[in-house]
Every structure is written in C-alpha cells, then in structure tokens.
Picture 1: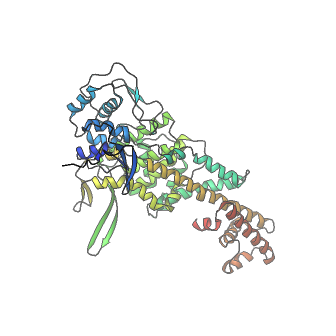
Picture 2: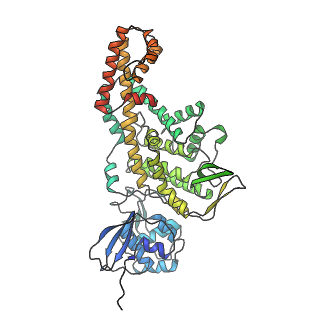
Picture 3: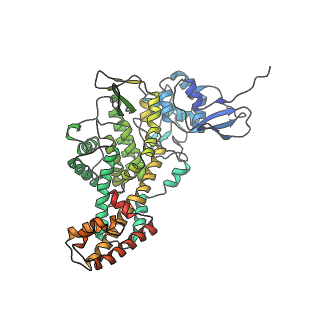
Length: 525
C-alpha cells in the first residue's frame, strides 16, 4: 500500500504544536513538502506558507527545529520565552554540547540564559569568533551591542531582557527609514515660499501645539476642562527638556489627567480597556485589551526606559522608529491608572525632541491619527488581539468589575514585534505634514494676504479685522448675506468687492498649487 507523503510543519509551526504553546501563527509559516524541488512561497488563506524542498535534511526534534526556526524565520523572542518555560533543560544542554561552536546552537544557548537569567550546564567557550544575535540584514539592531564571553555572542538587540521589541527590515520599512519627517516638513515650507513671514511661522507653530493637544484628547473621546487642556499643551511644548524616567512619566500623567486621577506610582492592580454597553436589564463591558499583570509592570517599564537609554546612547536607529517603540511600548504595558493613551502620544514628541532638539516645531501626529482612527485601532489590535485570544480572564462583577487574570503570558507583552507600528507612525507623520502642518501654514498665508489687502484700503481695529478676515475665508472669499452688514460697518461696498475678488483668487491658488482647502482647514479649527 502506498502512503502519500504530506507536508509537515517545521520551525516555529513545529514548535508551536510540539510544546502545545497555542501561540498565534506567524504571517509566514514554514512547511516542508517531500514533493517540492525548489523553495517557494504559497498563499494559505489570509496568510502564507514558505515551502522547503523535501531534499533538505531536517531532523524531527524540537531542538533541530529551533535551528530551522531561526534560519528561516528569524528570532521570535516570545516563542523562545514560551518554549523555555517548558523545555527539558538537560536535553537542551546536550543538544548544544553536541556542537557548542555552531552558530545557531550558540544563539539558542545565549537566548536561554538571557531570557531565563539562568546558566545552562555547559562549559564556557574559550575560543572562536563572536557572532551577532540578530541578523542585521533582517532586523534593526544596535551598532555595537553587548559581548557575552561565555557564548561568544554579541547581543545587538535594541531592547533588554525585561522589554525587547523588534522591528523587521521589510521592503516597506527600509524605504521609510530614509525619510526624515522634519526635512519633509521643511521642504514643504520652502515650496510655500523661501521667505515665509516670521509671524506666519510663529502663529502656525503655536497652533500646531494646540492642535496636537486637542486631537490627542479627542482620540480618547473626552471633553477635557480648559485647565487640563492648558496643562497638556504646556507638557507638549516642553517635550524633550527632561530625562525620560519613571518620575517624569508619572509627572506627565499628572499634568494631563483630572485631579482625582493623578498617580504617584505605577498601577498596583490589573487594568483593561473597554467600552460600557448598556443593554435592556443591565450593563456589559466590551473589553478590548487587558494589560500585563500588575506585578510585571515595574520590570517592563524599567526595561522600556533601559531600551530608550540604549537607543539614545547608540544613536543608530532612526529617531521616529525610536519614538514609535517607546510610545507604543508604554501604551501596551499600560502602567498608569489613567492617561496612558495621551502619555503614549506625548512620548512620540518627547523622544523626537530628545533625539533632534534643533527642530523648533512639532508635527501634529495626533490630528492625523484622529482622522485615521480605524487604522490606528487595527495597528493596536495586531498586538492586543493575539493577547486577548490567549488570555484567560474574567471581570469580577462583585468587585467593581476588576479584571481577574488566570494565566501569565508576560512574554507576549515583553517581546512584541512593532514593525507594523513603525510603519503606521511614519504614515501618520507624513499625513500630518501633508494636511495639518501644510494646511495651517497655507491658511495663515491666505489670512495674512487678505488682512494686508484690507489694511491698504481701510483702517480697522485689529480684533475686528481678524473677525472680518475669518468671515471672508469661511465664505470661500465672499461675505455671506447674513454677515454682510457686519463687514460693511467697516468698509464700503466698493472697497469690499476687490477684497472679495483677491480672496477668492488666493484661496483657489492655494488649492490648485498645494491641494489644500483653506476653507476646510479654518472650519476644522
């Protein structure tokens, strides 16, 4: 009887099944097909499979499949952290000792001791070249890294054992890394005119800060008090002036939340993000995300701060990637009882200002996020959804609906892949430059032009003049019948006509040249 040979899972797919990890599958799983003669990528539903030819010898053991996993799929730290909780330590040590100088064996050896903080029963290497933990062709890494004499491995990870995000060098992200968002913004300003009036630049910068603080709050669907908005605006204006520390993060949180929600430390209880749904006969909570166990928050946050320090000292990772890692790291760790979302978005500006203090303005990324909320939610779900699928939990309805967590999957929070988050951050920065940043300057240029034209024919008090200019621009360059009498109190019909013609032309020129609708920009304010 002929038995049909079938494809078999190898690498992480094999390990997932062998150890019963129940980890979500990767975007590309690796399988070996006995009939395949060449390596290929095939579609498998919404994901893909990398097919390895049957002629390649792959031994059917978990340890050999760890080598295969790293070789074909790179280092996935959360997988190894989960595996090392179940591993037979003696068997792993024997496997490594069989070829202690082999590169992949040394990587696995180092990963075990780094993640677990425990030494394997193996003699330290006394000779041999150093190898790097992460392959620089496929991952963003530190330039130098830390040398481990025992395994002769250089740990070039961008993070630490307590918190280590990764960014893969996909084709898309390799293109983005060459983009300097500040240079892009300066180029846009140059396109508007080489000699922009100082007052236009000053007013636009001030407004961009205001728009960022307002938009970041609107994302949380809150109606903050004027006092809280003023505090948040002040925090953003002073981003980057202080060292990033636990005390500074708590200080920022205290500036942006209501008095009753201020913190003096990281949270001590479990926390979740959800929506209250009122139904006939009761209230339900639609839980979107549950943060890591409170007992892990101090170590994860210290890991995040140490990662920030490593990236500051190294200086190789592009500033915006650095900012994305730290800001999204905070929002997933969720260390504060309130204000995590706003603190997360504040950190983008704080890190950027720390890395590049020469720039005198911010790019209102929160305004772009607000306009792309569904994309933002989708990016957040790339981490939160797998976590929620793996987590065993319930809400304690007798104890103020507090989350009760029954399984500890801290490795899902400690070792995230932020590739999608970095791409999103670049996309939102570029969107903010193209619309909010450029739009505000265009509006102020038109505003200044109309104001100058009126001043040349009439002497109107400045506070009244600003109101009249706003009316004209909101009307597309014309004054509506309802507001015409107000304007004609300060100029004649014959004076108004050329002003309207000039305003229409100025608005149309900006729209034709820069694709900016200044009427919409003003109405959005």
